[in-house]
Structure formats: structure tokens, C-alpha cells
Image (cartoon, rainbow, N blue to C red; front, side):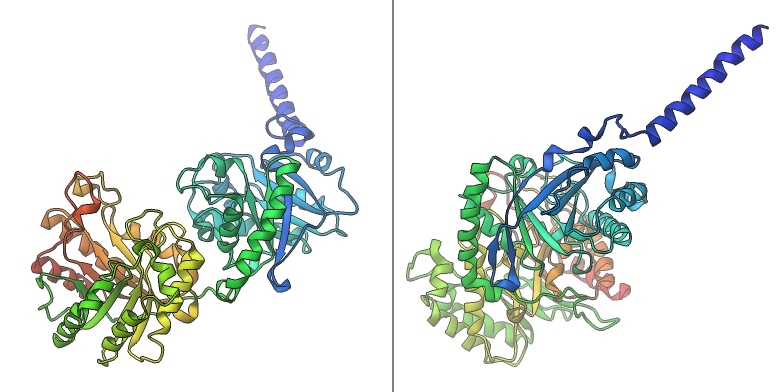
Length: 559
């Protein structure tokens, strides 16, 4: 009897547990036990500001659009979804924002945990209606307000493409919207033309308001203009949405029209047709072209060095120093990388305005002289203009400038080399976040260069804390992938004891062997400029000839 008294309550608990499971899975409540009013999500309930279609001369309109934002869990009930969609307007298009209400959402989406919920949601949508599905917006903003933010771009893209495939299979007429905030780095999260019908960018969102990675724009019109420029690689219609009251949205509509008006004069080169593809690379089993920046000539005598790097400012050209240095490199039988820094002008012509001065023709004589010197050899010359322009600092006078102004200056400069057959046009960002906003266009770029230094932060003095080459390489190459151009690593270096440098470089060689899109690498064999390092010593990237030789041997053995 005593045993039976124990078994009966246990059986009752089993029945109660089964009932609770059934109720939570099949009741009209979501996973959190909340009804449809909590399926609706207020965080992304923005209003439409405007719609821009590039095929319509960048015209701005404000179509009627109903917006419903919901939070989805893997086991959100059909009845909760139906209740959230019950008041669809018959006379308006629908924007349906869906956010994943779950930790580790990207992994769960990729693993199919959301598939049933997504199919249920899409099956409830009407057929005779234009519907945009917008999934997990503001993904590129470097904050952690939502589970899909501050994640790998590749992971986000895989999850997004999976959502698009599931939803289009259920509702073929569905329009899929990719919706970044338009923050620096937007293009890193681009899922591809084949799964996107429209782009949506947001203004005044909670995520962006809390982000501190980049300085804020001076005003709303500038912010809108920059956001639109960051979508230039996506040849899709663009919606702009805003969080805020009606007065803010109405003011933004005026700002949007003015922002678009400001873009139109540059639209010819900003909105070129871009097709992402595998870039051309070096032949199979070939080593990348090996170069050095080596003012002390410690490595230039090596038989393995084929190219030397010269940094040239306006003063160097005016005094004839560039011509002498260039001729010396050619005399050593090497090709040349020429990094043109349009400042330090001996004639004192307003250094802070170097980009405006460039397109105004102020430096024409210097540029003509530079390319005249370059034309005197048949050897390839890799000409890089105003490098590392995307870093939001003021080390160089062309940094922290408007991207369209930079692009106009780059294109103007490269015109001077037109017709000189040995000139290879190089666009040289550092490879930092948001690089592609400054991309000058496929017609004026032959190669993209990036810089890879092991030191991630000037406050790190322990050389073993430096990042491995591979981690930096993967991050930076991904950021410039939409250019679809071969890569020339025109600057790279590592500091520390010789054994540490050797190990770092040998691992770098293994990475380079696997990436045929890298056609050249150039080691920076000197210390950095001490003036920009404050109270601590500038890092010295210099290596010995024996360390350089071990790097070459590692490259050769890995090819």
C-alpha cells in the first residue's frame, strides 16, 4: 500500500508535465507564455521615410506601407501569429519585420530550429498583396542589443540566406528585404543579389544611437547621404525607415530628398554596376611578388626581392628626390610601389585641403612630373594614392573626409597615368571597417592593397599579444571582397624578438600559399613614425636578412 501511495503522485506528475508541454507547444501562446500582443515587437516598429529606386533617376517617393514587427521563437504558436496579422490593411503594401527572440539565434536558424515557425508565418500571409519580409535588422551595428549583432558576417549571411530560402519556398511572391542601419561596415553583411529584392536602412534606431565605434555625422542630411552611399554596391531599391514621432519623420523626408539631390552629381561613378566574383590571381604554384619598404637597404640585395616601396609626398616630387629614388630602384632591377601622399607641399598650399586641391588642379604639375618619371621604365609600377583613407582619425590630411570627395580626387589623380602601359592602379585602404565606402570604381582600380600589422592596439607592448597574420588577413580581405580585385599586401610587419617574428612570418606564408588572389606582399622593414605613438616607443617592424630568408623559404615550401 505504501508503494502504491508513492506511484500515484508520480504518475500524476507525468500527466501534468505532458499537459504543460502540450499547452506550451500548441496553445496560442509563444514560448514565453505570452499572447499575440507580446508577439508584436516595438523595438523595430519604424515608420517609412522614403523609397529610392536607382532605375528612376534616384527619385524619392513615400508609398503607403503598413508595418508589423513581430518577435519569433522556434515554437511560436500559429494562433499567436494569426492574431498578430489579423488587422492587415487591404489598401497598403505590408512590411513584416521578423526578429529572432532567442539567444544563439543565428546558429539555431542555420540548424533549422526556426523552420517550422517561419513556414507557419509565411503560410498565413495573403497571396494578393505586396509583402516585404525584413529579418533581423541593424545586424552590422557593433553593439550587443540583439542576439544577431556583433556576430560574424559569414554566420549572419548563412542564416539570412536560409531564412530567405525557407520563406520563398512557402510564399514564392514574397519580397525579401535586407535591412542594415547603414552604419560603417554595412557591406560586410551583404547576403547577395540572388536572395534580396530590396534594401532597407534605418535612422534613429536604438542600436545605432548606442554605438560609439565611429564619430557621429554632423547632421541628419549628411547621415542619410552616407547611409545611401554605403548601399551603392547593392543594385536594389532602397527604403529608409525611422524610429520617432511624426514630426521627426516628416523632417527626415525633407532631409532625404536633399541628401539624394546631393548624391546625384556623383551617381555616375558611385552607382556603377558591381558584380561580385572571384578575383584574378597569380598562377598555380607561383609565389606572390615579394617586396620591401627598406630605406636602410638591409634586404634589397636579396635575390628574392623583386619590388621596392617608395612613399612620396609633394615635396619629394618638387625637389627631385622622388625621381632620384625611383631611378635608383629601377637601377637595382626592381619593380616599384609608389605610394603618393598628396601633402607636405613645399609651396605651402593648405595641407588640410589636399583632396579639394587635387580636384581643383592645384597639384597638376607635381602629378604630371610624377607620371613622367614613371613612364621612363617598362617595369610595372604600382601607383597607390592617398592610402588608409577610411580610418576615422587625422594622421593624414585625406582621412576623415567625405567619401565622394575622396573618390573624385582618386579618379582625378589616376587620369594623369592614363595611357602609360606600365602603371598598375592601386586603391589602398587599411582594410578597416567600412573600407568599401571609399572605393573609387572598377574602371580606375587594378589592384586593392591592404595593410597587415600584428599590433592591434598601440597600448599593447607585449609582442606575444599581437594577432596572427591569418586572423587579420581574413577580416580585411572579407571587407574588400565586393571590389573583386586581386590583392597586393603593400604593407605588413610584426614586432618582437627574432624567433617570434620568424614564427609569425612562417604562419603568414602558409596563409598566403592558400590565397592565390594575393599577387604580392611587401614587408615594412622599419620602425613606424614615432610622432604618432605618444609616450611609448613606436613599434619596430624591422627584421634581419636571415628572418626574411626563412619567410621566403616558407613561401616556397608551401606553394
